[in-house]
Image (cartoon, rainbow, N blue to C red; front, side):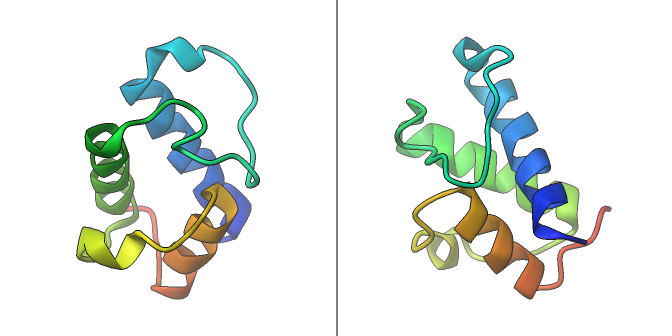
Length: 83
């Protein structure tokens, strides 16, 4: 699965958790923190995303990426697939 498809999945989950985002376009350069996600929101978005992609990754391993693009690249590298 390509990184853009994963960014789209992350963005969809971010909209579920942060309804104030509405239809604002989200891309790889966006940061969950800058979008207003607190630590609990970010953990929920990550758990939803890893479940959707069929991955079992400790959340601590997903703390380094600075934006959605870096997160998507890491998930793609870990073998993301649509469950």
